[in-house]
Length: 388
Image 1 (tube, one colour):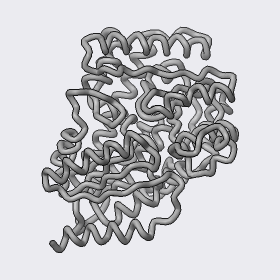
Image 2 (image 1 turned 60 degrees about the vertical axis):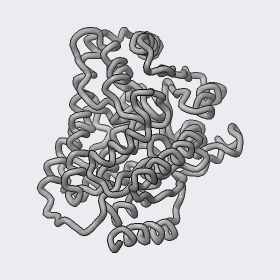
Image 3 (image 1 turned 30 degrees about the vertical axis):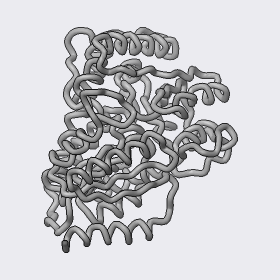
Image 4 (image 1 turned 135 degrees about the horizontal axis):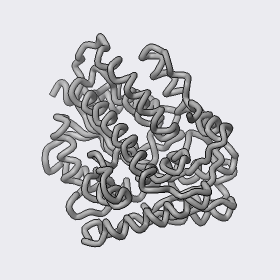
């Protein structure tokens, strides 16, 4: 039986569970990874946005979502140019400063900077640093077959690291565990949409985000415990507007920014860490598990600015998210220096204007510490809607 990497929340009341989740997310020493490695486990770090964690999980590795951290990139700064997003630098800093040690790193060509991350990473470490090439043309009839073969290439690389075969039976077991996790996350987001006074957007994020730092079995236990406690919470509905948050697909906003947003509004849906919720339905366990996983990425998935799929125009998908959550406004953000996010922000706001949907626009950086100005602007926006 694998050792527990995150035991602090167990046998605790709801507020303590949420407290320990925040403590873990803010701990830049990443104790869960250290506990996993201390027990002899191997770690595969993967950069944003989506990664098929089931493959690493099936090999007995810990899939660790590399998403930067609120720290200064003292060593990594010299490896990059100036005009790049913060998450690239702080992600490499985690490895250079030995806060996180891994046996493999995988990134994706989601933007020009991320495309070069594997090469920069590989110059500094002797373990495999790979690029996983997700289909550029998701509408091709051969996309699923291509991606299945790319997943198989990844499986063979992982087999070299763990020293054993990763069988289809291993993959099916992992698919079942991740299917359960996806169902629990759907329940969490349904609760947030239907009764947002039971769980704030900030609290839902705490419960979601720790999933990228612990084994999925542990995350399932955490959600199985927290969801009934949230539903039983003696909370009362407040006079807040319902909003959708858009712009958290890659670099993550600071926790205090999300808390400030949740204090003023009901965040009823979002794209925060969308990679952990990318697949929207169960992945079939019968048949070829790699093909099923590839097909789910293409056919049963969400959207983001870094996937180009003509069937999922981003502006229309945002409108669907807003209407599906019965939101009356949108909060459209982008990380500083994030080319995909800033480009999509323009398209989003034009569409929202055309449909008469109010919106609040902002930029963020993961290591921001002052939110006074943002809170004032947000309160003004909310009041303009409440008292219009």
